[in-house]
Image (cartoon, rainbow, N blue to C red; front, side, top):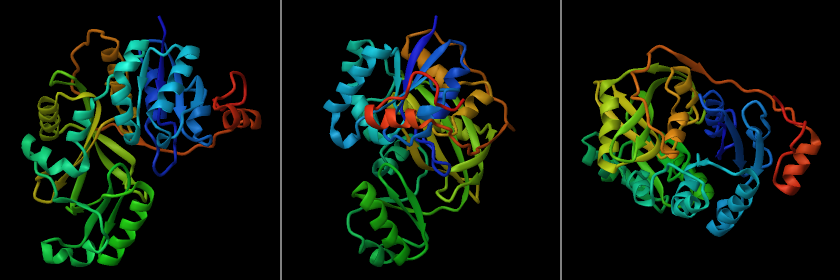
Length: 354
């Protein structure tokens, strides 16, 4: 029996793609026939038109329009498409969907996402506190409201280079106060304050994507090491690994928080071999298709949990499987583009690339 899954995050910029298209691709390769409805925020989100993985595309109201507008739009689309499961994919929308989850469940739309408390626990400004509870090292992090901090921070035991980060997105390494101030203003102008200062640690980045079962367990996990980066520091290529210390950190995180849903742990192994927690994302990463590539399809696993299905215990995934990201041109008919611009939905017929 087929199911319908709504997936957000249809943006797919080559240097910083959203996870939506990769999740849709995983779902299309799952063992359950799945109809994927893509939900985006911009008419130029290319995954909305990708008929190879997304059967229909719709626009959502911007988060600034509020949760009432978001709920009304999801209700409208549910009447048309009959969603079985909805997977939100973007950090900025997770709190809204967490608050709306009980209402969506009453409509028959299942989600499997962390609640508001769990989301707050792993926020970037609280990361050192959580890392200490889990027993993992983490870089010093401080919320910054004024750019002049970066001119005096060295007197407060900060050293350059350091990282300047947004609460939801964006990060820039700054080698001096001038670069830090410029990064602060750029990030604050786009995402607001506070902006975070984080001490820089040299080493090798390793990441884990997984699914928390909501009861303290890690239902499945895939680990990788980045091999090539974009200018924004996003993984352009990576290779699957197996790291027991990284896996144990993810298991402890799920045990402490009772995490429910997709997650990504970003870690750094320093030159002495120590592991440092850099970031915890409350959703799947853009490289999630690697999970299908190594035989542990994490989006499929999440959907099964959302539907209350019994899970088969996961097995260790193979190391040494490489992913390499690439860009492709989306060929879209003018009629299809006009339709989503005016009506907020793609056409039901031709006009999208396969």
